[in-house]
Length: 226
Image (tube, rainbow, N blue to C red; front, top):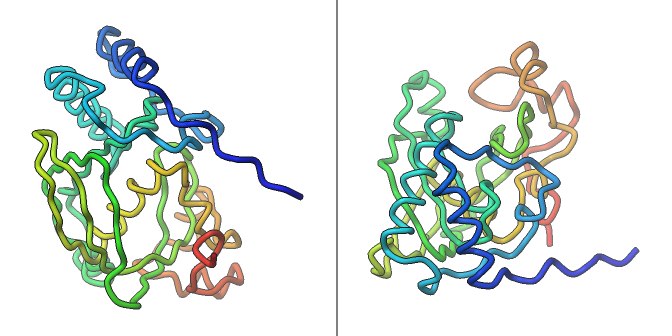
């Protein structure tokens, strides 16, 4: 079976129209779900398609949607906008033991444009993760535990920053969105659980119980094996 080529990158007019629809709506937009074409499209790099004022307003809307969900990250394609823009923030109170095992530390709000990440070292960490665009599901994904992120800030500055632990997971998850990749593409599919079944059977800081009960390992899977 041959695999189809990904949809073409959106042009500037398409991006501006999508943004203007959201900015003029007067209410927060819905988060699109798996099956929406924007989630499988290679998002366009930001090269001034939006004015500074439009970009700032869009970032603020994305931040509000992320908080409302609630979540720790949101990519523009999740609002149907095929643009390489994401917002990140993780300031939630979490169980100290779970935070320690997952190396989860607070992440102040950050908006990133045109991000690229590079694994630093060979270390991997495997944990359950979910996505606001696959409501009610989560699965185990093994990801590099430290990455170097190269990105552009909203004011146009090129930045590099190293992220590790849970912050590295957030960075990779949101950057993947901008390349038409969902976490299930990298997941151990035998681990896939509804939120209700996860809470009933597998809720713990690690994945040991789920791994034994559902029959999966902690290694990379899906496109991560390529």
